[in-house]
Image 1 (cartoon, one colour):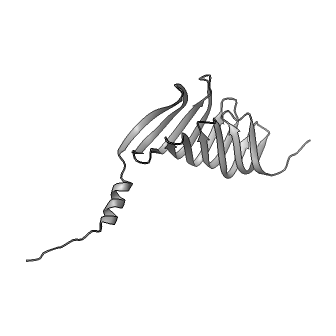
Image 2 (tube, helix red, strand yellow):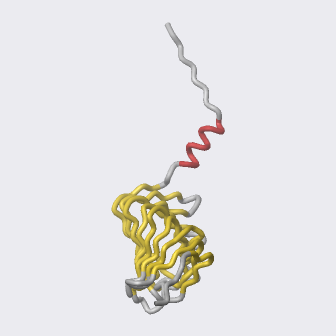
Image 3 (cartoon, one colour):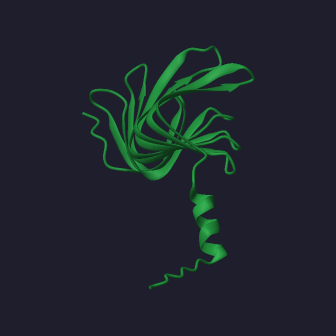
Length: 163
């Protein structure tokens, strides 16, 4: 006869419980509001929710439609993944992030933060900002309103041709 005896430390089983998600859903749509007004609609293929951390993890085909205080659609954020921080009212987007405003401006970067409280978008990463068929800006670090009409590149690079 053989007896197998197994041991596990309480510490390792606690880590497993902490990393477990309370909810996993597919093909989700989430609506974020501020004072009862819609500020964003989020779509994703996969959602993982952890009730303790008040975070939603979104994966695969993440789309975030942003709206102004008059309920008008202003821009669309696309990314491979995102985290919605329900406690701090933030969305952090990661992986091939693009922001497209209704008037055709486009921001391309690897990561982005949208602050629902201030209605601003930020990145510390390198970026490309296309404002028209002839104007493209490059840099590292960026802040803007949600429709990309009032933007600032913190560390711009490149050259401008004034011909």
